[in-house]
Image (tube, rainbow, N blue to C red; front, side, top):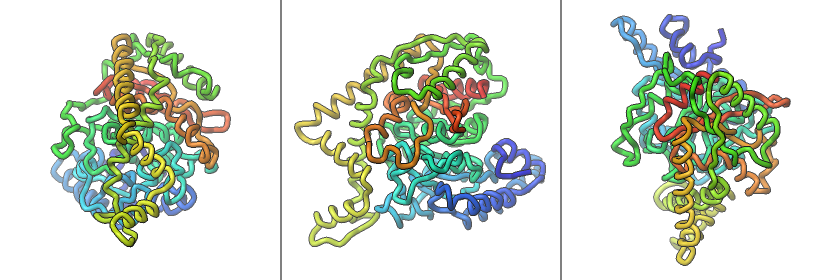
Amino acid sequence: MNLTELTIKQAHEGLKNKEFTSVDLTKAYLDKIKKVDGELNAYLTVTEKLALEQAIRADERIALSKAEGQDFPMLCGIPCAIKDAIMVDGEKCTAASKILENYVAPYDATVIKKLKEQGVVILGKTNLDEFAMGGSGENSAYGPTKNPHDKTRVAGGSSSGSAACVAANEACFSLGSDTGGSIRLPSSFCGTVGLKPTYGAVSRYGLIPFGSSLDQIGPITKNVDDAETVFNAICGKDKMDATSTDYKFQVSLAGQASSKLQGLRIGVPKEYFVKGIDPEVEKIVRSTIKKAEEAGAKIVEISLPNTEFALACYYIIAPCEASANLARLDGVRYGLSVDGKDLLDVYLKSKGHGFGAEVKRRIMIGTYALSSGYYDAYYKKAQEIRQLVKQDFAKAFEKVDLIFCPVSPVPAIKIGERTDDPLSMYLMDIYTVSVNLAGLPGLSLPVGKTKEGLPVGLQIIGNHFQENKILAVASQLE
């Protein structure tokens, strides 16, 4: 039995039946990381000491539960990886930036607190685009993550390491964050399941912010069942995050009435199948839609007319929020501090040395768009467009239950292929940013591979707080 290939459910059963211990499982993953991660660069920090301590505690908890004749939590003793923008108390949290190179998290993010209560084992912190800004994973200050399916290609961004480590069996599951596609894109490129929850479904407390009205933490897993397990563990209201909600999500995929595709109305947006989409991606996604139809679903062509403005709208709002959020990294309070002749010089040198090119680009775009005389023309206009994008989805969900479309117009690109052309890089987000603007849940489900063996993801979009419907249907398709 290869322990690193097990899903959460299989690992849980193995722990329950005493086939192996959490320490065995953890050591198997740590060995795998040592073997393959030198090439992949999915991890920025491997927390070996913490992992083994947690595994010992998990084994003690499992033994106690069995002695008392009780069940232990599904995630107890399960090794996972955490995107390095989510705080784990006492461990480094760099957001893949030089400015936070030596920053140690002083507390646990709420999602980490919830996972620790379940008894998970944290293997380490994963690579990402610096401050989660990018769709390819190439903007990390510590080098790009490589795609496990083809090491000459990107793993997708910004949660590049989180998807790559699950695809390469270097973790049983991982957490990522999604501001404009950052869980779904790498999941599509690496062939994992990635769930971006409804805005507010999961607490953002302890996530280093990029765009506060867009960011959401979510799971990246080996299958749909596992995504449901992790989502149920991390969702819910948190007094530390005023935008979080106590919506009751507890769902079980077993015997879900809504999991039957029979009679389900699936919307296919005509704006998402246009010039520019890779023919193989279109063919694979359309064949999955056809299979859903053959299983009894009703396919409805829908229109999301403001799609053409969504990307421009996102690339105003996200940089504006980033420029405000990253102002705190001033070289005085925390992070890199470079000496200067006066306070302004300290600010300029610290930010100049600490931030990478893409982060600087977005801070400048955001600061410009928020500045006096330009605010109405850019930021205010973008917020008005955002309302129209939301209305498009609201109208669509009056006619359909779920929306099916590609995650990305292309499969994983070659490393370096688009680094000199930021605009063509931004275009990879064309199908994902609208979901964040509207605060909707979306899932990337692996549905096939190109002739070159590159995974392709189907994006399933639901109405607000309809994660259960998305997961149930994804489980049927899987």
